[in-house]
Amino acid sequence: MGFFILIRKTKPKMLSFSSFLAIFIATFLLLHPSQAQLNATFYSTTCPNVSNIVTTVLQQALQSDPRIGASLIRLHFHDCFVQGCDGSILLDNNNNGTIQSEKDAAPNTNSTRGFDVVDNIKTAVENACPGVVSCADILALAAESSVSLAGGPSWSVLLGRRDSTTANQAGANTSIPAPFESLSNITAKFSAVGLNVTDLVALSGAHTFGRAQCRLFSNRLYNFSGTGQPDPTLNTTYLANLRQICPQNGSGFVVTNLDPTTPNAFDSNYFSNLQNNQGLLQSDQELFSTSGAPTISIVNLFSSNQSAFFQSFVQSMINMGNISPLVGSNGEIRANCRRVNGS
Image (cartoon, rainbow, N blue to C red):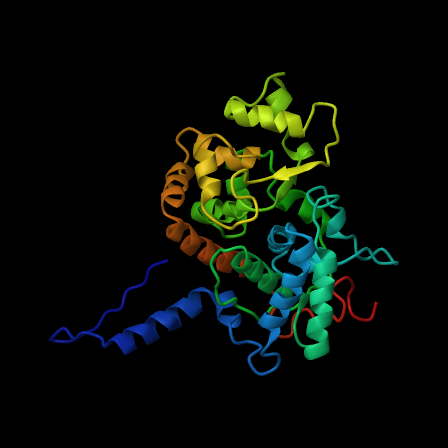
C-alpha cells in the first residue's frame, strides 16, 4: 500500500528526522493495527519479570529434555496458524463437548508436545502475577527463549495477547502446513495468514533443531509419490543412514534429528543441509529442490550468511506472532491453559 503527501510550498522543505519518524510510526500503526496493540512493554508494571520466569522454567526443562525448545516453538507455530495466536492449541476436550481439542487434529495428535512445560511456566507466572499473563503470550515468550538458549538470536517479544475461549479442530486439520505437502500448497497456507515467501523460508529454519518421527518422512525413503523408489532429491548417504534409523517395517514413532549436523543448536546449518540434499522432511527439501522456486535464492543467502537468517527469523517470528491476536476485552486470561475459565 502506498501513499502520497502533497505539500504546496514555493520552496521544498526537508522534514527533520524526528518529524519523519513520527509520520512513519503513525502510518505503520494505521496499516498494522494488530501490531499496534501488541507491545514489548505490555507487562512492564503488572508482571515485569515474566520473561525471566519463562526462561528459568525452560532452562530446568532443558536439563532432562533437549528437544523441548523446538517443541515449544512448534506449539506457538501451530497455535498461530489456527484462528490466530490465541492459545487455542492448549485447550483440552471438555466434558460437555463444546471444546474439541486441536491436540486431536491430524497435525498435532501423537506429535505436539511440551504441554506439561507450558503448565509449569503458567504455574510459576501465576504465583508471581496472578491473572495477568495470557497462555498465548507464554507461548510467544517460550518460543523466543527456546531460540536464544539454543544459541540463536534474541528479541523483544510483542505482548498483550489474550486467550481464546474456543478451539478449532477442523481448522487445525486444514490450516497447518504438513511435512509432505508441496511447496505451492505450503506457500498458499502461509499467504492465507499474511506471511510471505521469506517468512516461509525463515520460519522453516526452526528445523535447525528438534526431531521428527519416521512416519512423517518414511515415504521418502521407500515409496516416494507411489513410485516404489526413494525421493530422488535425497542424498544417497543420508538415505542409507535414515533407512537404518527408520526400517521399512519399523515403528513410525521413532525420532531422528531434523538437522544431522548440529541437532541441538540454533544455527544456519539447516540451509546448508538443504544444499547438500539432506533436508529431512519433504517440505524442507522442496525449498531448495523445487525448480525455479523463489525460495532457492533465500536458502542460498541464509546458508552463506547466518546473520541474515537470524535477522529474517526474528522479523518472521514477530510477523507470525501478530496473526489475529485477541486484544483488549476480547478473550480472557486463562487461569489454567488447558481449560476455559469457569469450566
